[in-house]
Image (cartoon, rainbow, N blue to C red):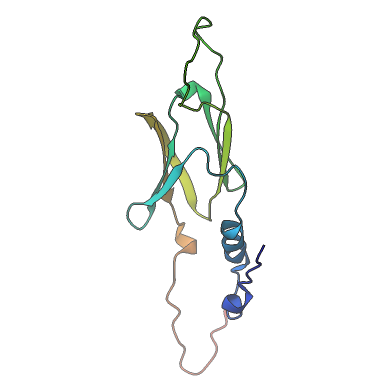
Length: 147
């Protein structure tokens, strides 16, 4: 396994330690993370969508949860409703899965929808007013101190 250090890129950065961690976790190839396949899409500056191929699952089989900035999507295998069915070939996988996505600050889950075997999770970035960029005026040679 080859280790890749992002430290040289962050020498002149302040407060980007989590950003470095995100890069390192993305470079790690975790076993089992390829099922089910998914896309992460960007729609505009502040809108994102995660689309998960959930063929064979119903809404009641899926669970979405957000806790401490991590979106977890899980699906469980449901009980065989028709006990008298014998599969000659079963190509539609319905095995249990669990996917986790780390959400950066100010990203909120707007909603989710299951349509045509695709689970779409809508995300939106909501930046509070105090976190938006501010213009800092340059004083006339004297430091501006407020009491």
